[in-house]
Figure 1 (cartoon, rainbow, N blue to C red):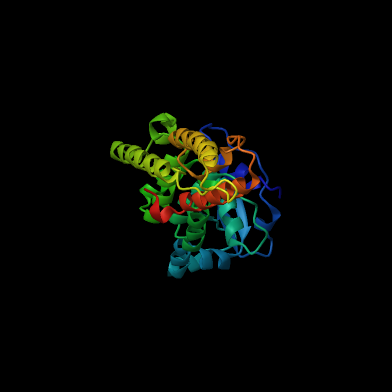
Figure 2: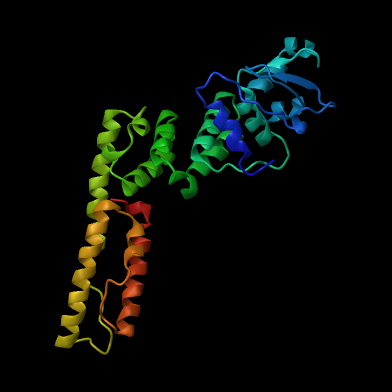
Length: 285
């Protein structure tokens, strides 16, 4: 299976078109030696091992624990009220096999929602941990914020809110991204962004940066480096209004005209420390 297969499966499930996707059930889920015949909500059949569902899914564990479930045979399919696309994605996570890579935050959120619905707690926790990672969080932080708010996952909601206000003004977000987010939450995000901008601008004041030994204590040195610091301060302050995060450090290119290598090293150290402080979310505002 290709790397983007999981997107094909989950993406099809989210489509609003009435036509069913054309796809073949992977051979691993049509095992003739398996002991359970499963049917999706759109009529697709799977032949799988019941044990994997029992171990990984609370819903099926409870179902098979009841006496009436023991009457089912391999010729009587057990119905699962999910489209085949979602079932395939979930089965890949339950089976001890190579898992297709999940590359988009939308796919990860859909999987997390399905896992929570069916009591796949281990998978749900895994999805939530991944949603907190930058490679997913930065794709659509408002979508992650909405998901975390809906399921009351406070830690994830806080992380998502931080990335939202660092990346853009919440009032400039696409209307579709704001669906499901209350007006109060939008106001809270806007207030958080204002506080974050102020925090970053305060940290970016480099007036305390030291001069190099060759120029320290000289009028010439104070004039040269003072001018450079003023220029750099203005640059960082302007960038912080747009993107109040540590990414503004990467925009410091050819800002200084001073050719003093020693001073440049000290400035480099100063910017490194500044980046570390901006990345410290324990003091976000």
